[in-house]
Image 1 (cartoon, rainbow, N blue to C red):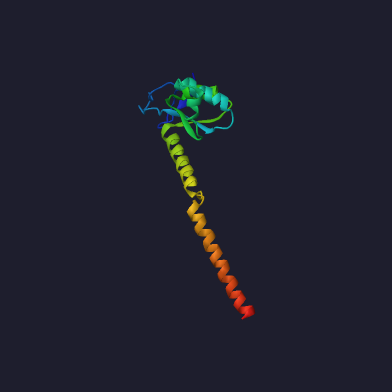
Image 2: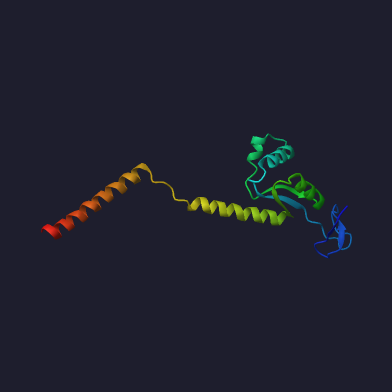
Length: 149
């Protein structure tokens, strides 16, 4: 049994404790966060499918790094789960921090998708070609008037 520090008073307490026996501070629940989903995809899918009780194809929908795989764990449970995923880049964080990190990453991903330029539609392409042709004709007419007029 390992000892972990109380987040409030710093006293060493059991990793399985629900609250600190010294100050009564509730011990935070931890979350297992996947930081990179490309490292060992097979191990990650196996873990998620066993934990969720689903197929590997369904488990793929849960994984988009960074993402919280599990929450509500004690420190010891989180460490054990991290060992099961030894081929993947995972991090154990208090639930609130893990949720904030994932929300920030989701916002970044959403902004990047919004920033991508969309391709022109058919009619936008027709307008652009017609405008380009008109401008070319106008330039040629002006140049022709300067040299031949």
